[in-house]
Image (cartoon, rainbow, N blue to C red; front, side):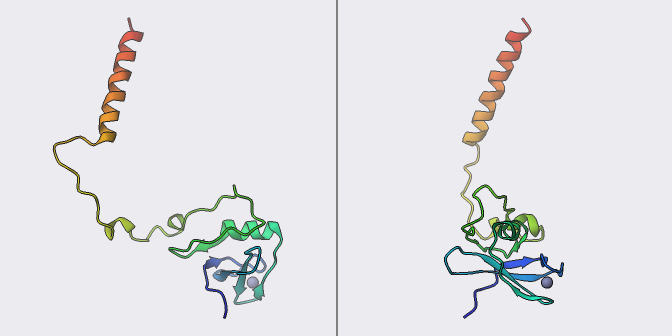
Amino acid sequence: MSNPTLGTVTCPTCGTEGAEVRQSKRRGGHLYWQCTDCGLSQPTGATIQKRLWRETQWATGVQPIRPANVPDDTERPTPAEFDPNEPEPETDTPSEPQPSGRPSPARGVGVLLLGALGVGAFLATR
Ligand SMILES: [Zn+2]
């Protein structure tokens, strides 16, 4: 049983695009990739793991588990940033009905803020 493909990456070894990225189920949860040119690569060093974590274009809906040796604060762009053509997920989820004629709480706060700013500006100019 091989692990499922979680996304793709430009092969860090040879630069071939579209190498399939998978994740080991073993301890450490290291990422590895299958390149059409140079085959399966499974380096577990922190530098390459971090690079894979950052550079992999994760498939939609994939929730990869951070490899053990990749620090918490390593940036990982969301899949949405990779695929602008992805349809908005909002359309399938039922949106909450907005009561008409009543300002939303957020808007009320905005009005209050504007009011406060106005008073502040008024006081400042006196
Ligand atoms: Zn390669």
